[in-house]
Each structure stands twice: as structure tokens, then as C-alpha cells.
Length: 182
Image (tube, rainbow, N blue to C red; front, side, top):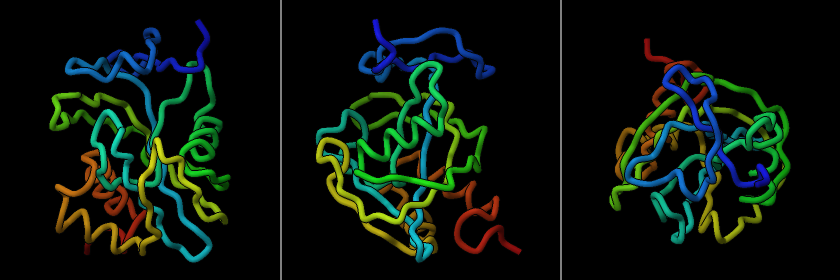
């Protein structure tokens, strides 16, 4: 079996314990596995938000961060981010940096499918306009970072649960919006 569509399974402490086909891990009993989230900005400081394709298995049609994915076993995460940016949005990225290395979440969507991931969060930049893959992204918007923060605060139900948690931590860390309060 090739590693092209495998995810890395993780122990509770985050250490790798094996692999599994990506198509089999998102169920009602999803094992802990490795993923990533990426927030893209452009030269004007705007943040790219995307709306998940209606055909997505989990959270179809929900607004979320720029893109997410799973690094292949033994794949450098920066390479995985570049691969997913090209596949999902038709973009090249630069200045990739990890800002929330220990982000972890578990969420259950309306159909009962569980997300259970250690999911480091990255910021990156692009100089290109997205050309979304319709199997991944149905719509996108460039927004001011403060608008994304306000959306999380006023309508969290309209956004992916991981984005809601991540934005709160990104603001607290001073990576988005006006930084931590006070």
C-alpha cells in the first residue's frame, strides 16, 4: 500500500502508533490522528476563509479557515501544507509558520461523524487569488481578521468547531485580531 492516502495514528501523548487509510478514520469512533489547519493571508493582510464543499463527509457547507489536511506518514508538514494549498485552492504559499503547535480537538458533526485530531495550526501567505477545487471548496472570501474574530464571537454555529477553538487561541496568542484583551 502506498502512503498517498494514509494518515498517521497517534497515541494520547501524540506519538505515532501506526497508519490507516484516510477514508476509514472519520467515523463515529474516529481514532486520534495527525492533521493540520492553515490560515492564509494576502499582501493586504486579509484572511482567506473557505466554505467546505457540500459533498464533504464532515461539516459540509460550513465556513472554516483557509484549508486543512492530513500530512502523509513521514511527510514534512510544510510540504503537506503546500500540497493541500495547491489541491484545494490552486495556490502556492510562502512564509509558513506554526503558531499553535499543540492544538487538539474532538468534535462530532450532525451525522455523528467524529473528528479527533492533534492538529497544529499554521499561518502562511499567498500572492495569488484562489482557484478552488469544487470537491473541496464551494466558496471563499477574503476578510479582515477582525471580521473573522467577530464571526466566531457572534455566530459560532455557522463555522467549523475547530475554527472556533483555533480563532480563540489565535487571538489570545496575539496572532489574529487585536491580540489578547487588556
